[in-house]
Length: 433
Image 1: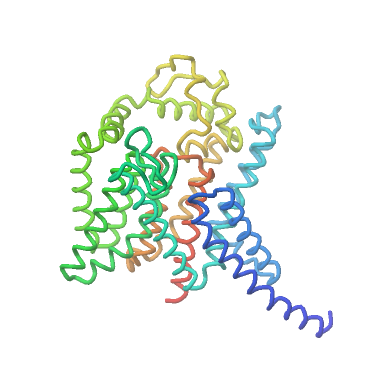
Image 2: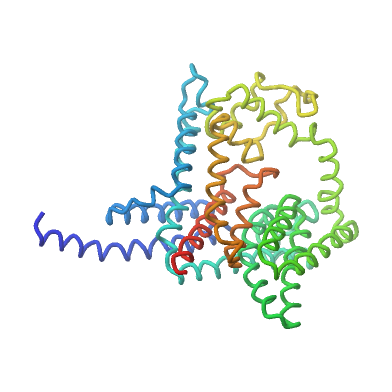
């Protein structure tokens, strides 16, 4: 290649790269808005960001990001699940057939998204700052709609609470709790920490009120797991940020008092959050969750190496060969088919079913590989935004929880999006230090 051709190629690259970067950043900044109300378009935005990032790597011939430790483990886990999803009936692989294989392959888009956000798309402080304000606006949007629905009986869109008093906020179904519990921490922890750091009464009161509102709105929404995980996330944040501790204790006490008052102000929420929750814990082995987890364990035991492939629980759960006693030793009343769902409601049970004990071990390694860089330096220098993002990752990956399917939209999109943001903050703030 001549010198002129080389220079021409560099000139074209210098024109293309900024366009790719702007397009990728625009797609990332729009993704939270689409995750709220347009999941299909959110998928398209993720694809645009992925393609722009891969095109940038190809043009610059920069593939160093492939050596990122978490990504190496993530690609190994992904490759194993894809292998387990190949439909080979003679070997017991790929219970879901071609559809399961396609879904397993498509999981790669989320790993690329996290790498793109960490290594390229969010390297600009301005881009990360814009993203923070968008997440803050999304948090306020859900929380205020829920508050309005609680006070006036309808949201701004005229939607009533589901089942009488489960707040739906801006949505038409009871799904406000899960996304709000994830975005609330990175949105509010930096503001609360900044207010409480001033050490003036008015600022301290404002910081406490902010956390009080967050806890109270999660209680009033009426969804158990988001409420519990939000409380857990605030505890994680308070352990890392000393200035938050008193405010979190006060907010926690207020939340407990609100739960105690819920039989009067929200009887349905009280039934689900206290009575039904207590009943499920007491008889967990024969509860729907206990039965589902037992079924996932039996599937994993029968397929210890390769599992049932991606989305395997959906296809294997109704099969009589997997019917077995629940965790308390009792058989389900109908023999087992009626307890089935599309997924086992726990990420680790899902990893076991999809990839056997090998897949579960790889998934656990990936979780550690994600949390280590997110946590690096936080004990010594607890930046509030990074603390909020780390706490969000902890509550998302906490093993003792009822969950949606790992990669299902919108919660799968929210998780990987926030994970990518957290990785970017960890990487580029360290670089700037």
